[in-house]
Length: 268
Figure 1: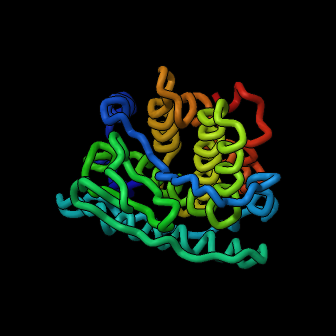
Figure 2: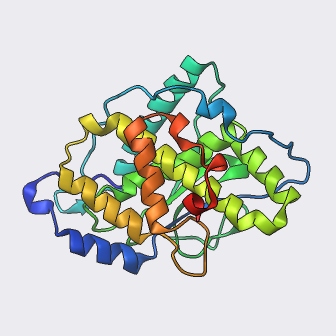
């Protein structure tokens, strides 16, 4: 997600933000390859869920637009620094192995990335097999925005990295192979958990962000508008995306993010 200018003259009506979000078809994607030899995880995410509360930290938020010039690379670089610092310390306290993800920026979408075709309608995505976060620096997901949505997208994709580090991805892939009929449901559980983990991070840094209640309301509206409430169901309804983000935000702990045991209606 992008960091916003903090001046009062930079703020826009919430209605404008919601319209922009719907027009952009803001979708964050995890490019997952299901390797034939991946081990089954009996309880996806158990190591991550038991790591405790993510410590409150400071995350300085630079402006996305500075002196009239867009600064998406600088903004996202700052976001990645915050995410690496916060989660690496959290994993160290929990005794879990950690490594920073690779980050790649693109001025424009390319034909191929991570060895596959660039996914359609993707705001940003995580290449699981290469542990790489990919951020296009253009598009409505980040250009001209003043809400917290770009930061949330960055934290969501980082959540997929955490899932890979802790065996959640391996467990998800094993479940898909064993029950193909439920692949879409498992995919939504996987994505909604990343939404929740993004909430955990934003909740842990919220006191350091120069934001108002209106900013958080705008983020909720943008997240709700990004839900897949139609026939194409990959990330969950808008209501469920907001619900899981809010769970993580309020708890500031991965323990709130057990989407795998949630009832089907909570991951629809």
